Image 1 (tube, rainbow, N blue to C red):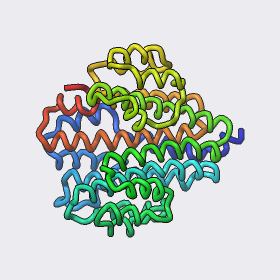
Image 2 (image 1 turned 120 degrees about the horizontal axis):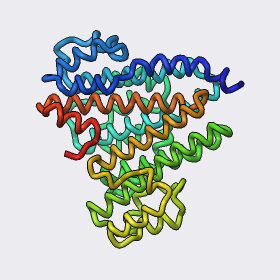
Image 3 (image 1 turned 180 degrees about the vertical axis):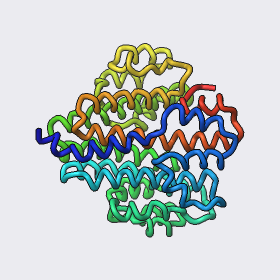
Length: 349
């Protein structure tokens, strides 16, 4: 009864927000539109985005500005959930926010590594990061190179892993991305055990454990198929967490001499029938996302008055924004409706 009382307000709020998520028919309609301004006009009629798009000047009707509006909608949804949350739910939400911090750092890394001349355009995120984050956007936007960027993360948990890498003197953008991923998942795995209790810890462990397992499978698969990497290099780019894949199974996956043997070893694991990596009609990334969505929805159905309700909604909203930005990019480049829908569904062209 306690969990029902603690989550009743959040569940009601999330159900109302879920009703505003776009449908498959919406994406079918958007894919058939002829220009980005037409797609923006279409979104004006959608409750989740109308408020934000109606504030836009027509001169700003292109993908880059629309993407900001979409993320404002996501962060506003996060804020609404946060306001309805109790003490324990707020702890989880603060932990969840760290994924947005990592995304922000990754974006800034690309700015400084690629030497973009234009200044950082992060004003639309500033309100939310000032409210929920340890990261100061005001400090980050002054960064002109990787040295300054890392220094501007002092007093945050991300400074130490990036500082060590910077001191090596030869780190690439890929190295920084990998270091952030390794830190993020290891930190989430450890901190969840202090913040969550009993059934909620079990749910979160299953979610993040499955995500790590599947990311590791993807990376091993790509390392063997596309880059022909040796085992020591593959170990270095995997997350040192094992959930449903036993340590010996993981070792076999990494150290198989070729892709065919890797596939045979994968057939022996927990994910053999759940993660259909041999579905050649879809990208590996889409197969991964499809599996996670089924997992989240299953959690929410079994435990509606729990963090599963929050986790599932935010995942679905983030995926919706990803699909919308992908659709806008396809429309901008003049792709056909069929091609656009193929990209939205992760279908291999």
